[in-house]
Length: 299
Image: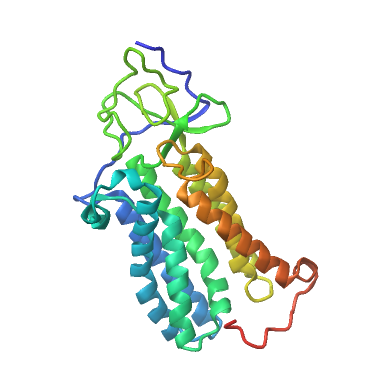
């Protein structure tokens, strides 16, 4: 049997929680995150005297659209897992991708808010920190499930999950129940998760990054900023976060240039967000405390 790798310094180990009352903790915490995010958005709208009815309508459509977008993103990013259209549609078997949910949710929200002649970018600025909170809460479910385990690591600087023998890991992270490496196997095997080995805790990285982003965006909300600024900061920060973070992931397919589907989408989001910030103007962001609002906040 191959020797196990040395455990990293910042390591965690705990029994996975595959379900709570028959429901995946991923689904439970994702639902709690969405509900909390929606509550934060509506609360802030009321504080600022903005109409809530258009946003309630947008949320009603954006949430299911986000679920569909998350599934489409996952299927595109993991084509080898699906042999038929029925398998691709079988969402109840698991398999969603956060970035697809964000893109589909924001796009659907834009359409609905535009039909209501609501100030879209102002509302999206208000939504940005709430969405970051929702992401952080949802990642707690991934951690409980031990989903999104990353590449093997014994680095002293890694945030890692150490697998114990007999643990039932999340679907796709085998062997499960976990066993130590066998003949010809080792902790360095990418895409295999053995007892006694440490793996990058990718969901933990995303939770920390999203929580920090939420703190920054809530702090920015206390000062007047140009319309679209917080949305652009959210897109640039989270796009860069996922572009870098996905290099630590262990089982994702990398269809183009060695990048995951999420990383390819992240590049587009980074470019769009950086362009938006350039259009707003960095000097004005740093100096102006009461910028003149745009003529049409929906644009």
